[in-house]
Length: 290
Figure 1 (cartoon, one colour):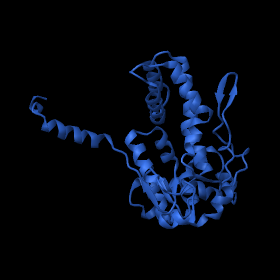
Figure 2 (cartoon, one colour; figure 1 turned 180 degrees about the vertical axis):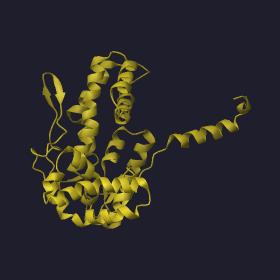
Figure 3 (cartoon, one colour; figure 1 turned 60 degrees about the vertical axis):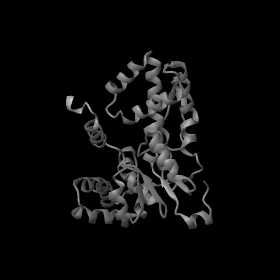
Figure 4 (cartoon, helix red, strand yellow; figure 1 turned 90 degrees about the horizontal axis):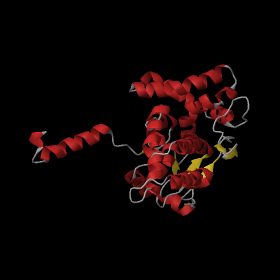
């Protein structure tokens, strides 16, 4: 919903980070419901940097998935191809599951309906969901990749989600330099990090920042690799007074250093499910026979 002075006084805005934007589109039903309840009646914010990541992680994967569906006739072959052709299958499988939720009726796999559904996602459907309900989209970094649209070349969908340091003219260098105190604070935090994960995450960010600072050339933070390394810290700083809403544990390390607030939706892990299954089996009359 649009922010107004009255509801801002009641509750601070929520800044929807990339993982939440993805989960509310392709997450499990209970996760979608939790997110829906959390964001109800709240001022919502996000950014063009989040939109760029959303397009890179989800919309681009949608194009890849369509190519697999067009290549393989059977659903099982599509799923096998996903497992064999890609090292990071999480979002592809989530997207594939969402397509099936929306297309499979009476257990029938309708390939034509799947194709039409994927095309509707690619031709604006996913980006529309990114902004529903109404979300204020800030543009502090002036990201040039986020506004790029899907185009058709030689009958194939094409989306440019990658940026080249020498070609883009975004505002990320000035943004990072303007918030140098936050990055200096991250550097001071590293020796006192409580866990290896915290130390590793902050170190990755600081290495990129220090390289630009030492060379007195903050244009070095641009480009796909460095932008991705800095993205969580950049998003945290973009949030300002809003509470960052995420599923990413890295914000547990970044936000305290940057003096930002966050809410993290946690994920049920395999061992949590296993423990519940084991407890349920223990209650079954035939448990002793296992």
